[in-house]
Length: 363
Image (tube, rainbow, N blue to C red; front, top):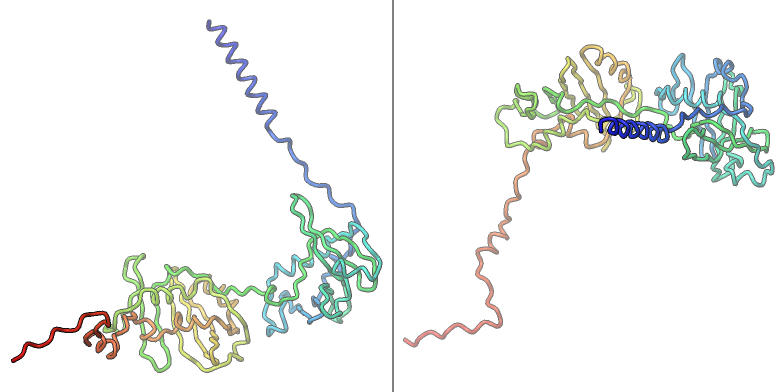
């Protein structure tokens, strides 16, 4: 009996091992590198002299220039662009390969989005990498991109050289964007609301306000100055605490060119030895801010980015950064108007279907 059990168990184990082998996927090998010709052989070496990037479209020109080791946008007052975007574009050009020739008929180029970029309503873009003398290091007309959903398949786009009508399907990623907003990092800070320990608000023409948390880390902001104050709205206080959560800007200018008149300032004190002062200007309905930080390494990183710049932010940030006491007051239910009170006190008019009142008894 024991021998029979051993035979059965042995057979079961062998079957399990066999099933595991059958179900285990075979190791997949990486895709073979493309044998297509490079669009720009030897480009990596020549890119050391790159001084500008241009994207020309029918509706305008985007120009990015190099200042030392930093790439900036002249139309945004030389504000730095995201370095990873520049690296991605330049690396994509060095690795771009001409995979398949397509039409050379000039009349058919618009079907691939490769028409003359200067033509009205054209969808093509002329990408140019220039040296300091504005000589072209590399230039390419980029048309429609092909989206691949399969794994291990490179991205591709239709391209052609500016002085040729021959179109190509090219393999590689070439992120050509003419919108300057896509080149800059608009995120200014993201400091969670629970890091705020104390806020001091000094708004022009208004009494100083001080908001602080009690000793409990989970406590809510409370007003400590002035000590006598009306009941406050918790949602409005929470908006102050969240002033630096996902803070982004709409426009940017050099600090010396900040528009509008000074509105006031606020000092936000956070955990981990960080304090941020925000100074507001108001130009019509637009809110502009300047930022400075105090503290350790975190403050140094913020100052390296903020120093010298003024940022336009959403109008709602006015009440988050320099609120008035009235902005924080709890809104009570609207009092009844005198007309409402009189209406409640007046007797109701008799219904036309109601019976007439009884006649008075004769005296």
